[in-house]
Length: 139
Image (tube, rainbow, N blue to C red; front, side):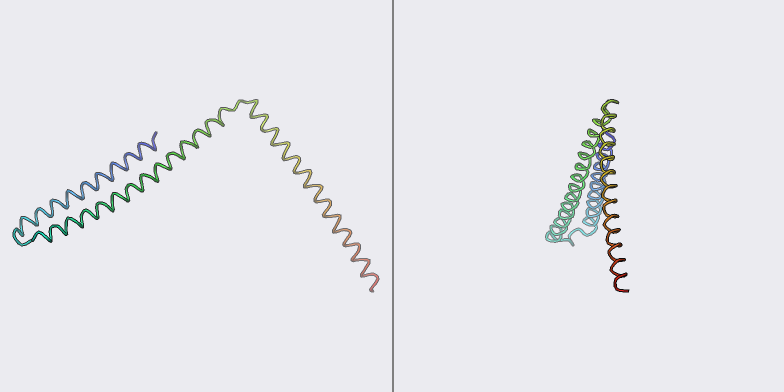
């Protein structure tokens, strides 16, 4: 739940910041308009408005992408939480059975590894005997 609250807080802060920027820009332009009444023509005001709208659109797109990323993260965290809750509900007997199964698998692997090591050592021993015999024949 705290991730949701943090997410909503971040979205609200972003929206408040964007709104404050737009209000500040509006007030600045209103002041310029009152100072330069008659000097600023309609084309310039339309151009300025278009630039502001483009900037706003860009900011909204970035905010939307951030929201989607955070939503994906929240979804992943919820799935992880459900998975770990299911694991924590394993009963003691079930956990012991899983531990025994894993122990058996590890023991099998260690036995196989031991026999593979013995086989490899025997092969090198035979090769060493053969090499010694060949060298003794040459000398």
